[in-house]
Length: 229
Length: 229
DNA sequence: CGAGACTTTGAAATCTGTCAACTGGGGTGG
DNA sequence: CCACCCCAGTTGACAGATTTCAAAGTCTCG
Image (cartoon, rainbow over all chains, first blue to last red; front, side, top):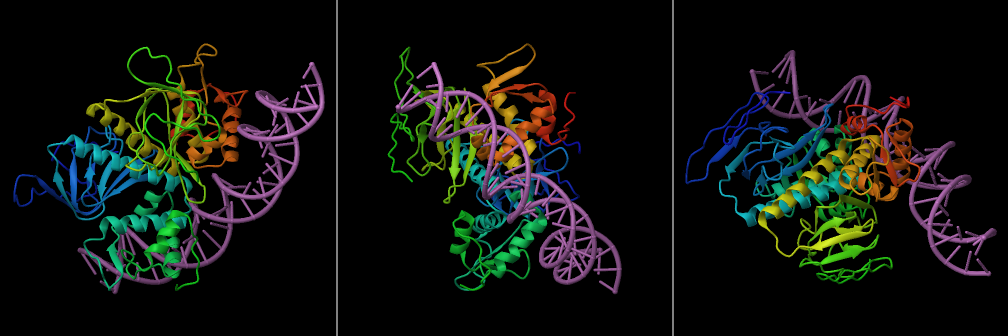
């Protein structure tokens, strides 16, 4: 759709943002800071450079010719981006929040293999989600996954509760979970009404009953709309 | 569901078959021959040994607690089994045909990484299939994938046509494609009636119009029931 | 205050799943 | 050798979950 020539450390944004400042150089590794909705690399283009996510959320996605989009993975702090994408990238990478990246120069075999194995395991678990879970189960799984990856920054709104920032929009979640925006929204309200999570602002979610949520995510329990517990 | 202790080179079958003969030793690598519906390793157990498929079809699958099953990947000749399964296997491996395996002793880094990347790429493509493709598109994709992996043995029933053995049953395909047996069957007959494939015995399929099938698989074209072309 | 993007909610449409019956081939046993 | 059984596959009718279409509400930002 757009002509693009991406080379290492030469990142461009798709919509209008292009925020690539080398950032204060404390030590050796090159650090990038990207604003939300920046494109790290595009499907079909020359192999992407490799980064490690320091902070924020990156989405990997594939698209069908008619525009249908599938988000393959959500990548949070600590994980690698740009591995397992094939020679000509088989997917695009887009930031869903302000993101801090660290360029990876030396690719340790052991580390690369761990990263690749993690990609495989996550992709396989996601395939099971997409192929066999119901909409509420998918949403419950997504909430727990994101909570796990993005817990740190804003945890503990109140004692005993887990509160975190949901970077992807409902639309992003839909593309990740193989659903539509409306279905995702409906599932969120159902889960909220069941007393399992809470949110006023749709991006800031509090986990009230993570254990029950996990049971639903695993398919071993249905949502009952009998609030409370 | 069953108590199992699988150790390297100690393979057991689930139903009743257990056919593990060391096979004629031409040279060094250990060769295994398994009958259909043998279990290579099970989800949740100690890390599986690694093999290369010489001939036949192996399915990797995950199961939800209530029995829902998702086949993650179909593995044919030349590919590796037992990589990217995590410490405690996150998936089971089952043979869908008579299978010849070659034990892998030396794990070359480059080779392992290629194998892992292939697993990632296939899993991601499959996630897009599961999340965003319609039933006919999924079945078309599956036929082409399997044709590509299993073409060799019985190719060329007639000149110009591609004919191959479809190892997975309709049920296996359903679990792979996130559908039901009935839907898979209906899609096969639709694709057959559209003149894109042919089969008398449900396991032996002839590709009549691979190009059209590819367009359908990619989502850039719908099935028209106006036979012929 | 208004524009636009995102979210939520409702009602109708549709694809796929569920249930059920029928078919055909392979294997077993008389 | 033939009858019978069993399982995979096919087909039809119906139900249900999710999508589609439509509209209103909310929040941010200029």
